[in-house]
Length: 434
Image (cartoon, rainbow, N blue to C red; front, top):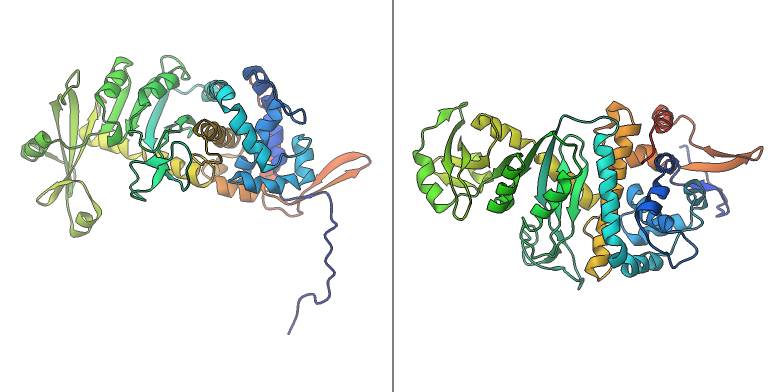
């Protein structure tokens, strides 16, 4: 039988090797945007550590997040990678203790400025390279279960791990672009809609004027003040409505129009208690099979389940529900933020420091989204961040100098060489941030 190599000497002496050859694309992307200069201009902060500039210490947080090193401890891989440091222009890479110390020491000072700078980036990429005719905002909250005694990690709404302590962050995304336009860390006992009005006020300042705007949200955002705010701004909305006691008695007796063998619709005007005005409510009545009865936890009467949405959209009732179904995209983004980025993690015991870390993770997410949109071919736009990392960023490479010229040697016969070269060409055409 054939055998593999039997006598191989192992020596840990190879230099100029890296797991992260593809990070050079990210470096070129950020360099073309003049990202470091933008951070320097936007965030006035005197870095106490003379070994790193302020923009460099932020990048030492952002690069591990973009590369999938999901916590501060795993960034130790980059401390041992001299090629990574050379490619990104970092003098060295801080110890995890230094990274945490920066978060704790600096959070209260730079968090507001960093959030403002992030919004400037969002505003820029919402209109670059072209202005869209409409935008659709999806709002959602999520629960991040944590174990420990971090500030703000308390018991609250936690359907997956009932009784466990958590954070309860709020998130807003744009449907078509998949940009995260808002995200904030909240205590675990925060109400679902807490802070949504303030977040919406910030987001509309980022959007071009006179563009059509619509909003979708689940039942946690069924709030009279939020709905009134959307109406004042002439924003179309579709928000799931919980079923009140009055609705339970009235809805089954309404006149329904059949849509298909299983579904029918109707609508009615209704003014919930303490709301300013009456609004249009659309109802989808679904005839249940035994299998669907086991799946659903909705309001049911006899053999029917009822779904209700409050809206001001000029669509048919079934059209409103079809429009709302596309909101599933934000649920995928929330999973990506929690699984592929360290969003809502708690690297320190202080809430403000963890909020700063959450903001950085949202910047890392958006940078990857913008990189994909501007630099990669159309067929790559639907790929996950995990696929992007495996195929393009985590490429083993050797760094050499030939005739005193630096050369990054990537594997021969790489399946994605054309994509790598395509991205390099596209990066050169990007306009810097003003």
